Length: 118
Image (cartoon, rainbow, N blue to C red; front, side, top):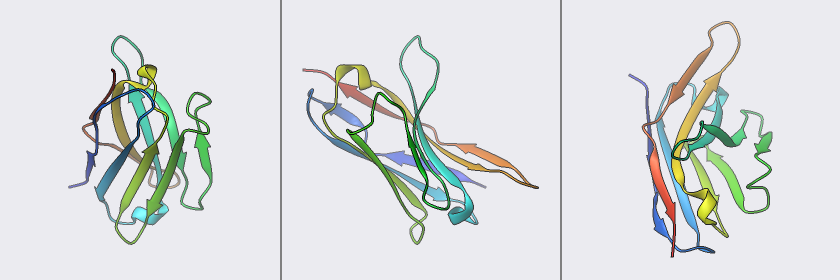
């Protein structure tokens, strides 16, 4: 059974940093595009950052220059380093694994809460 388990969320003051991790029990992890999405109360889930199997990275405009996505294929883990956090970054952050092609697959983690507040 595929599992994506996020960790690293919490409460942080504005301007602070957090590092999210997502450990995937997923065969063929390296061929998946891994991503982070977030959902704030009353809002739709939105893309934060994705990293393809080839290393191509995409960021939402709102986090460019502040967040960094990375992955360790040997550990089946994807990370999101979040710096200069703002109150508007408050949301539940979800890990996503996506595979396209003949046998497409899409998986979600259960989410981790990030709260930015003084």
